[in-house]
Length: 209
Image (cartoon, rainbow, N blue to C red):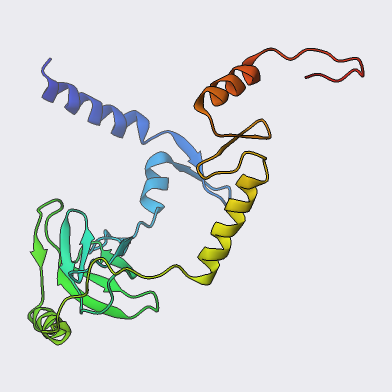
């Protein structure tokens, strides 16, 4: 038989045999599978999606933008580096950018994921332009390399390092301490390093060298 004929035969079997199987209700009265199915009160299908909220934390960039699922959405200037929450309720076309204190900073129409779109409100663009112009100055730029004399703390640290190097009996700057000995000559450094690589040997007092 064809699939349609097989389905028709299965439907007749379910009505004649499957639904007629005896069952009992909770109170003990006799009924059938079809009777139990008729007594089940199912709620109607909801007209809107379940009100779940998709949220993610994001950081506001220096350009007053928040990235969410491959797109960037604007907020007001002056909050760069702040971590906010981007929330989207399923079934809606918008998303909210919420501050750590729970204040909605901006609401945008959500774009398709990974579209690379940059969405800015006109008021955010205007406020950002005003902030940039307010920070503009015609003063001479700061010198990149300002020579400052060493502080008292730096001088004291330099004196301490010099005294430590001189305490090894060798003196001089640029000394290297190897095995508790201050070494100046490179040949002595190689010799001292070779001595440290030799296997340790026992001593008369039971210790190892």
